Image (cartoon, rainbow over all chains, first blue to last red; front, side, top):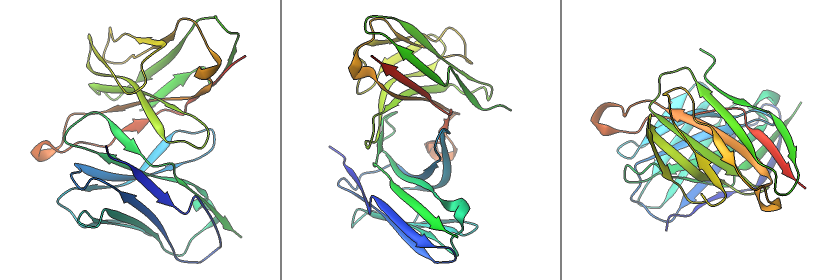
Length: 112
Length: 117
C-alpha cells in the first residue's frame, strides 16, 4: 500500500529565503507525482506535475524533483514571498488508477 | 471558465438529516471526483465518475451516494448524516489522458465545509 509522508508538517521562514519541502513515498511504481498548494477556504491548485519518466519540472520560482529509486520528491521555492504562505500537498497517482494518494501536507508561513 | 464550482460553501446538519452537495464543472471534463478531508489528514476519495452515467466507489463510500446524469454535474448525496461525516468535501475534475496515456492534472473546487451535530 502506497504511503506518502511530508516533512516537516509546518515550516516558518522569513521572506526572501530559499526553502525545500520534502515528500517521501513507499512504492516506487508511481504514474506521476504532483505538487499542489491549498489555501484556506479555497480548493487545491496544481503547481507542478512530474510524470514517472521525468526527473524534474520547473515553473517560475518553483522546481520539483523526482527520484523514484529513493522514493523522494522535493519542492524547491526560491526567494520566498508572503504570498507563498499555504499548505503544500504532495500527491501520487499510481498505475493509471483513478485513486490518488495524498500526503498530509506541509504548512508554510513566509513572514514579511 | 468558472472551473469547478461547489455549493454550498458551509452547512450544518443535524444527525439523521440528508442533503446534497452540488458540484459543476464547465471544462467538459469526463472525469469527476469527490474527496473528503478530515482535520490534519490527507484527502480520501469517496466516489468518482469516468463519464456521464458511470460512477464507482473510492476508498470511503459508505454513507454517500452519487449520480452523473450530465457531463457537467456530479452531486454527492448524504442520506442519514452522522457526526463522522463532519469534514471538508472537495469536488475535482480532469480531462482526458494526455499523450502516451499520461494522466492529466485534476482541478479542484473550493470545498464545502460540513458539520454534523
